[in-house]
Length: 502
Ligand code: NAD
Image (cartoon, rainbow, N blue to C red; front, top):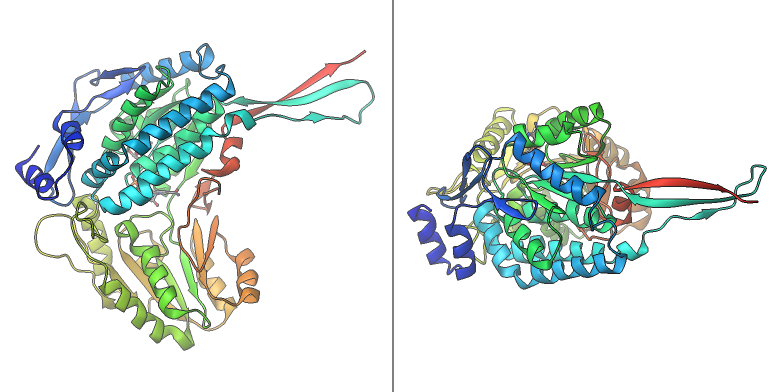
């Protein structure tokens, strides 16, 4: 561990449990064993507020993935997991949720140190969301069933359907909500009776490795949960084609998702793709402007803008446009930029130096294209990958800052006149992950909801997530759903059974 990281942990009084976890080079988790990669290769893991090195993790090989697939297959095809009585499976998942909750503060510290995010939000959102997701899906195994049917064709039949788990599921996870996104994929798959192999993002493997220790402690049988760390272009790509894997559930960028989808079709795998976004926000002229400004700022700057459904394009009805932007700038000024372990941090560093370069280049492009930068966009002096939240006004639809996903704290705004104009602007994007409306005029709100091409529509709110509600995109934001009962449909086969009766 670099001196700068050690000083950082000292300055913010990080717990002994977290220090001990970070002190050792990590191993990956295959078939209940903690192992190095087959060729001994590792990659370094860095802390974004200081830029210093924390530790290392194994850079998995194709042979490592093969071992994980064999373990997951053995458990699925002949093992205990899918044959475990539903209530016994529920008990194990609840035990895991309990352990995640008990170790919540430690997991939040690990997540903040690894990814740069606010430790406070990590505890309240990421870790609580992870616990809630496991609790919600822990309740499902005893409620999964088919139906009996009364056929109309001639003859006398007993006809019914059975719900059966899909098989071995590979989960490919991004770095913005590492543990929570992993939970979104694993909890439902395990509840359905599938076995899993997770590949965390290279930048953020640590919380998933700590999770695997807790899964083992909870008594999840060996081979049911496996974690292979390493490069997306090697492990992720091999997961998409591996004949022993029945489904790939991917969360990440649209270009990589397209690649995963194309590869998975080759071996006819089931696929869920949760991809990028450029979500529109419509502020109507009757909105409560101070409240809307606070919610809009949260909706785009939370997690330093590294949120897939961030409301990054804000369209404001012309009569309230200037007043709304004044409120928005006022609120944005109050958001504290600080290292992730600072309990009052709102805007933490971006995840990596590369991400900072990308986001800063977009701010420059916005300026060059003639958008008016009315707040922020610079980088504070000192270490860490910080970018101040940026607000651009009077943006035009063809600008790259309006069209492309930036994945950083950059907001683009422009005025609109009629609701038809607002709908055209909102839908003028290849993405379709989410949309938000700020208004208390129910008639106008209900007219707008069906016209917006997005998987989630938030009204007077943004990014409200609950395990009971499905989440997933339309258009280039992907297909399939995480969360809610809908996710279980994507993790189970339906078998039709016909029995001739005398
Ligand atoms: P990314 O696409 O670069 O990587 C995502 C994961 O895919 C990582 O684990 C990576 O190692 C792996 N990967 C990389 N190349 C691969 C390949 N060729 N084959 C298979 N896997 C490969 O995305 P990112 O930069 O980690 O995350 C940011 C992106 O994720 C943004 O576009 C964001 O919108 C999206 N995202 C979407 C959702 C959602 O629910 N829709 C949620 C969070 C993030």
